[in-house]
Length: 314
Image 1 (cartoon, rainbow, N blue to C red):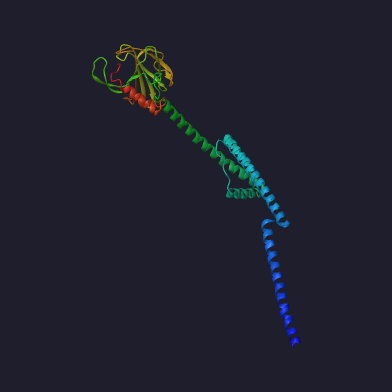
Image 2 (image 1 turned 120 degrees about the vertical axis):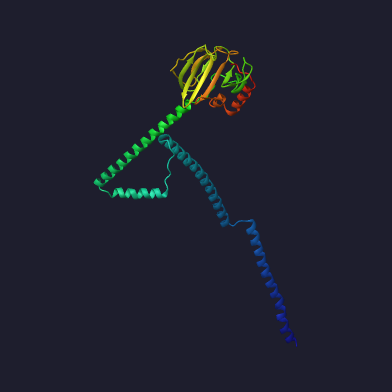
């Protein structure tokens, strides 16, 4: 009986001890895992620390290289811009950018030249020189034609009466405009074919365009001492009631030249200059031809001022 009890109590006593060791083993593993997790989260291993240092160093070097690349790119852009500027100054045109196809064609052409004999190169050169001479001749003829057209356009522009005949920068001297106005002596509405500038005797009068003095009238006319300039291209200008003329018929004048001095000659109400613009024999409004001297707002202002005076001076 005692032997059987002793035999059965041995394994029973060993089982709790085994469970306790198993529990301790897994508890130790759990503690080790938890320690590893905590340590890996808050602390770096030597290998990780070195890797981070290497990564930081690589990032710093990369940023330095980026800054150097930006600097070099700016330098290259400046060099390219200077090269384009020098090209435009020397050749007066924009530089031609070569594409990959152009480079390939140039390489093929170079290989072709390298494969030619001296005789073939001479023949090719003579043929190319002849074609180049023909192109130059054609371009020279075109340039002469363009120059003639430009000179004709410049002469046409200079023949247009595009400034005022007196110094009226303050826009205060134009007193009677183009159109129907009250005649100062007959007191009736008559056509006024020009504009009147109220200026004192002796005021300088300018040619409003390049031209030739066509005629000079004496003081016996109603317009008094006056002259007419033929500008070509159908344009003429007339200057009346003058006191003195400093040009003669047939004389060439340029825009801005002093041609006379204003006065009060002829049938004149007061000292003034009567100025007319004629196109193909028909009188036109001179105010429309002051575009070289006045911008559009000042021209509108001049028209408003001139329309206030309903009575002409002649």
